[in-house]
Image (tube, rainbow, N blue to C red; front, side):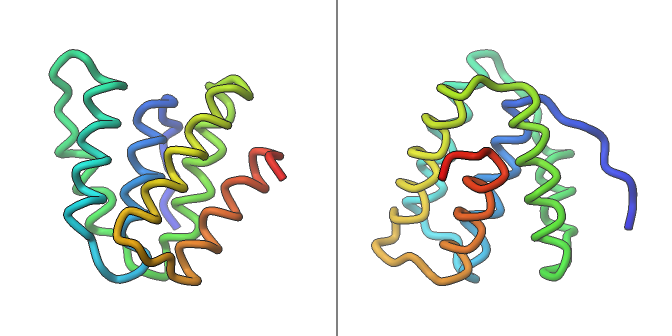
Length: 119
């Protein structure tokens, strides 16, 4: 596995949300709109995320878990408990956006909460 470069909280959050929205095999329009909202809130200035999106797009499904956990740890390192709690609420809303939460989405979400000690 290639070594990943630590990312800041906002970039890590983007990776987490993108993976959460994709793990059920379907990227719903409502999820895309929520991610756009996250980006608008986190990056008030224009941010080029093409490189980040490419990294995510090139991941094989079996690499998602490690990538997700890595970015959950990056987010944890750069955030307060309040920020993690707030992000977890946002992520929960994201996985419910298409009105169906798959077992995989739930598992990834639970993993994130466990890594952040939010259980």
